[in-house]
Length: 571
Image (tube, rainbow, N blue to C red):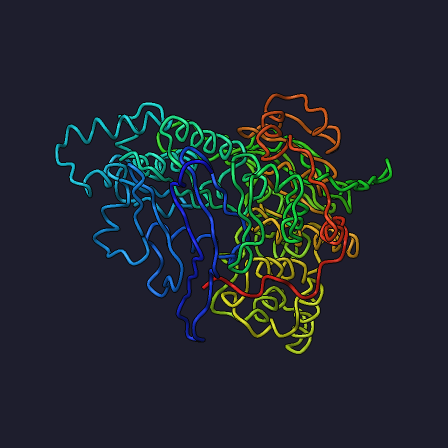
């Protein structure tokens, strides 16, 4: 670079204290961020990317420590400031004024009992703003700057009154309050739908261009990095595997790990040639949904219509996807099919049983054996107090199946079925990685031998490589066990990989439906086209394969690996 970088990290090493001793999370990495440009730091959970970013803003947790290297921040007239070893009072001066942070989760990052205006005003007050009217004017300017309508009203609202995308805009407004030189965006869109993600990333780009700030973008999604970054740094196990100009790295990756990330990012790679399941024309559908309607009462107002007249069939042994943004009605539909909520109107037939006519008690318990649900967040859906064996055995105990020994045997068999070793049975959920926990959730869903499995955003919270493993596992289980899937997703790139048919939902209505190939290759509705356009990397050509890439681009039906690379969780 002709000009000195805004941020320069040299030979940085970070260690965490733990009960088992020191854990080296970052090991001698180098990277830089130029003014007005984006450097993306890419890697899986536990790769050390967030540790490096938090060190650059002085927010390592109490058990974390920089044990080597330097971090310098450029100032005016070529001056550079060494950030390693700064006392806390000096960090307080830097944060907000020179370095802004856009955190990952807008739900947990905003105080639920403070108004939006108070949250955005906080950095102003910390840095000495005292005039209340001046603060109010600046807050309204910031909220308008990040594209929130009616900023005066938004400033008086609370986080729960805003959507996820709007809350993320609030965090960006707070980060920009004092016009910092450097923005650190730590997984800023990982919890958002693809269309909202695209909008938020566009906003960060626009603000970067307007202010000249440098951006350090932390992400596990190589497709997002490919779309947005000038420089790309790929991390694994605390080390840098590869770095350089984004276009060059993506066109000809030299590291096998980068090629694996490219192969596992569904929107960046060439779509695997699948053979869609084509049932015989006379095959009776396993699932029939007709004119499904779900209303929710609202105090003092008209009912809210979450699902409005949806109809579709699912043939045995196939995968049907429900696609749409948050609030489109897809999860409400899935829960109605699984028997968790009685719809307001319409009919649902699963394996010859009219679900809307099932009462409570024994009939409902028996139906649970036909349909099982796998949730988005495996950590939240697994009891942290129970062992993995007890979690798997619980559905059998609840339905009074088998002896204690038989239930234990079934639990071990289903661990093997999802490619987990038997020693996992005696662990707790916190001792497993995200991918391993999701395998446990799948095993628990299968232990009652259901005919239909509802997958509610079952891979959206996972890194792309782990996501690819789980998708391959689900494909293998479907082939071996003859399972039928209802896949709920906001990600058309994932749907394109695994589904046979699809319904596109928007605001409770089905705007398009049919075979996946036809709907995604020739979308008829503008909303479907918008979802496709929002997929990161959708228009980027596939990277040239490297010498080690063949093994990493296994087909979707390949057996999952029995020993997983995600055993070690981040400190």
